[in-house]
Length: 133
Image 1: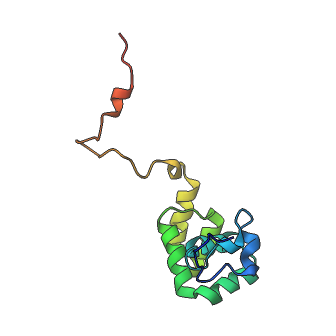
Image 2 (image 1 turned 30 degrees about the horizontal axis):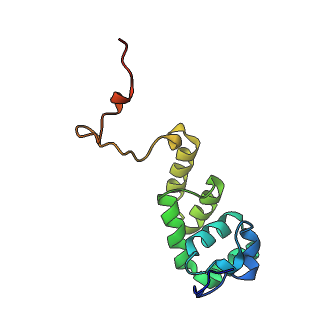
């Protein structure tokens, strides 16, 4: 159920409820949970559910959410990203580059760090090691 006093703009459509088994459908809002709904439907939805989200959100909105994930956190499975990448990007070279990245060991490398490069670490990470006495 939705929290008391919180009005949902558009509750989750019943046709999409089976994509979210860990959620109470009445608590999800189609607008506030838009990115989560779109990415989940692209990754795990049946064709009818995918058509439904395209009809509801529109091609451009879904493309923007997909591209934000594709160039950002990359939360979608690789095969899903490749499929929708071909659809939204159409750039075979960019998709091939993404596949090379996904198959490489560099995908497990840290892409962000709390340390600054060069001079000016926030703290010296080598200070965490105990030197031999």
